[in-house]
Image 1: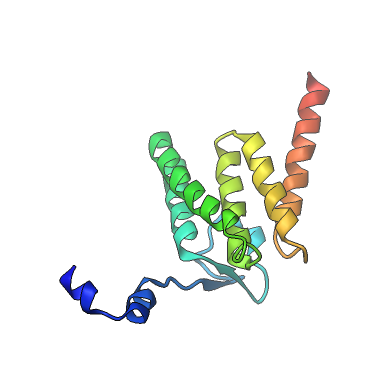
Image 2: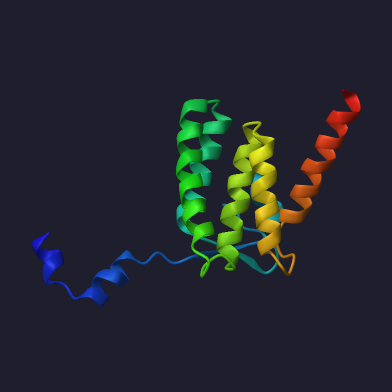
Length: 150
């Protein structure tokens, strides 16, 4: 703590800054669940929600639901902070964070929350650069198909 107190404010802020990163459309570190979101030439992601989403996927594929829910809670917290901070909400990495949250909820069967996330992301994505609209329409078609079977 004593060292931090001696540092200048701009030095501390620089050390706390986390930069977004780009993934190429053919990158091997893009999980299958995000393939349709990574477009040519590249797509921007924020590392914090991306890491929580990867953690969620690892737990999901291992059928560790308790850990899935913990990762989803962390992802949801980050998504909520991003969504409530309107000066960042139009950034592509922010939109992708909302989409990742929607995907995670969809995987766990919380279709209402997933639909809301995709709808929020689609509303932000004015240039239709993400999969938000197509994912939203897929869920709507799914809801319609369920109603037909009832």
